[in-house]
Image (cartoon, rainbow, N blue to C red):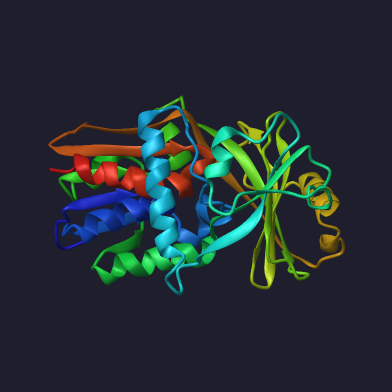
Length: 314
């Protein structure tokens, strides 16, 4: 790299790209360093339900949730972002509909024949993102303001500090080794992609207990089915048994999925931490801003955390 950048963002998942966009659109010269192209990161395997906006009980996370609701609803009005307002059902096997549910646009309790056997089920209208298309949109938005993505594996953040006075660490699960944060762990997720048999609404079960649930999201001619969470599993190889379990759960909710052609099976590692890390610290003569540990809510929290990154840059 011939010219010294204003900012190096390490990591090209949704959190890294969104942070880079906020910085580049503010006038900084930004380069993203990543060992993988955006479509090869865990972010590409997300569902991705961008909401609903509900209280997390934490001021910062509540703010990020509100930011997501605003930004993704705006993106859904724009062509070629991969984001749309989707109508679908949220369901649970325990309790009643939470108090905040009635405030979600499109809220309506499901009729008995719509509840798929769940004691709690209701309709909502929230943004969803076709992640491969959405990551392409983010990449294009970054390059439109002269940002760039460079394939480069980073073994030490000091490498980035030599190229820019500000380094933003958005390495997800990689932060465990890169900065020695043992509070980060991988929680494996897996999706089965099938040909769309004619679905136009999504379904998502709140997994209050256990590590598996039913969820499916239609995107044009394909449907993304999930889901599972396998704690402390760092292997991105799809599990055939998990594939069959996902198909069985989703088919029980939506019989039209039975026999649908399997187009792909994908696995990714959610960067789970007890709370996302977003703070700055000295890095030699440079400054590092850490922005990782968003778990399975990285897409939803990406714009809010990117706003906070921007606020921390001098």
